[in-house]
Image (cartoon, rainbow, N blue to C red; front, top):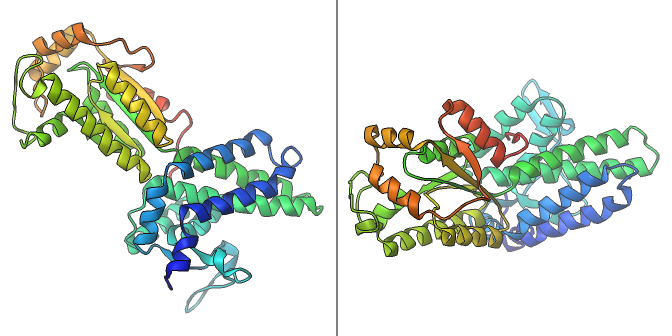
Length: 368
């Protein structure tokens, strides 16, 4: 597909923002008579929040050649499966600039339509093939965003038809708007803090949540040793507040942890940060990072009885250097964390993860 500076510009964040806002303006007169107002308003809120914090993501997409002269109207109705192969018809031709778009955006149109037609498995298979064969490293949030954009474009078309007297278009508009809303909720970029004292199971929970939602996990224990030039598997035990665990080293570790998280959030990646988070200063810094990135922040504090954590610390293997005496000293020094959701890790692992996942995504995430 052709690529040039004009095409790349149309695939940028500002151009996409312009197309979204034009669509919002066109459907606003239909709030109440066609669209459910609460859904339409929340679609706009979630959309603009995502776009506001993701300029580096869209700039990277343009620079890496993912914005092309594409099809821009790839619906199932325009694909004909013939004996000698498929034919794709009817690319958008009344405005060339609307055809200049991210290839993932183009593919998302058919993915959205297959999902709406009741074939989510085919949508997932098609989009999986596209991402694989295009060598596209897009974060899941971007695919969800484009699926939502395509659904809401069809909601707009249905609103216009309803305004012309097509009674059946009302249901179609609401169906597409609901689909857009669900994908935008799944697209929300999120910073998850998983904290707690040593032995409370925070690393196990952080890893499970990262796997569940396709998030990136950053772990303070690993990063602390990386900064010191050590392999994560090398143990570096020290008395509480000494050695690699002296306040200066700890501040450096948390600073780097949050810096890396902020870069990932700007690129559309949701991030799980595994650390104790026992000092309110670091938690305040994490809140500031989430605000700058226009990302949601979820705080989870793992808890378990002292006798359970002590037993875990004595028997576990891994990269942490904490022992029961360190855990006891940290418990005495830890700042209160009332705003975090408490997660009891003495229950079955599946139940613990299910409870925590409900805090991260109160509604079940859609899987593109």
